[in-house]
Image (cartoon, rainbow, N blue to C red; front, top):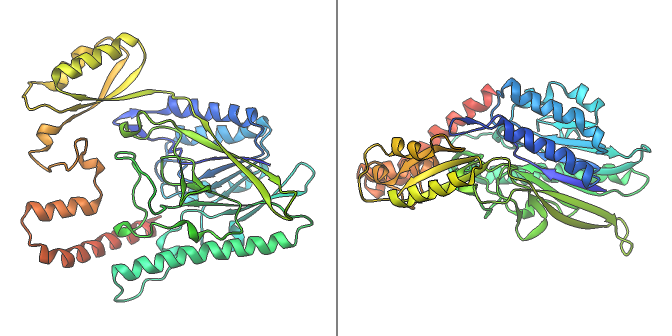
Length: 416
């Protein structure tokens, strides 16, 4: 049994106004080749297929064209869960048709544990894998609001609700497994934020719940699971030091902070353990993804930037560039002068960040920080500081602020 784990495609996402369809097309074409080259049996996609709940027709066309071609690679099954960026109704709409192609979509978590269990069978119709396909769990999926509850109460209830949800789904899967004629591996999927996990400024990852709640530890996953395929975070990494609980990461750099990162997918090989009944030897390898558009972040004063841009122009390659101006001197028309350097070349400056100007408004706490890098809580705290609000009043104001955010999140969930 060979599984390929990927997530966070974010089809339709742009980068500072530039469409990225050519990159998405390149990745999906590469992924089809990888499925065939590595003789993959099952493809797992752990959420955030699209970048918004209302993806463009072109983004949807890329998705469906890819799924239509998967069977040609020899891959027998695809299991997809919804992420926080996805519309459950949109993913579920063609479910009957997709199941005919052995594409299994689980987009909601409100129909009972059995609806999140996918039993996959081999070419001889024998069971070969059980998948606990748990989609992004919304607040309403795991807890009921209570009058007078505090933010701490909500956090505790959320974590307990998510833990109980996984326990219920895994328990139901194990009961189903006991009824099979022979044991099969058990894999779980999820779209969540693990405690202590690594993120990158500007990668677009946001907290899933109000007030940064429910960053979850690895022990929410029952020990019966042989591999956990996670989505939501864009940096490839294991969770809690366990190599069998992993984020595959996004296939494309989602911001210039990831410009130098190597993106990858996970290939999981499972074979029966001859020494232990109903146990599996699991080998995990990461397969690097090619870069389909070169990104570069340049930083310095005018002389530094001029030199670095000229070096990129000389490569004659296509580059998208973020320029971070870090200089005490004032230069008139930064943007125009930068554009003059790259004119008639394959280098395009997508973003110019002037630290000197930013310092006059909302002062960054780190050299490369911009407003896009801050959470709502951080922005609110800096507003309190900027208006000289006494710290003794902060706790009450934050409580009220979180209540407002919670109301907005609930309204957004009801609209979905």
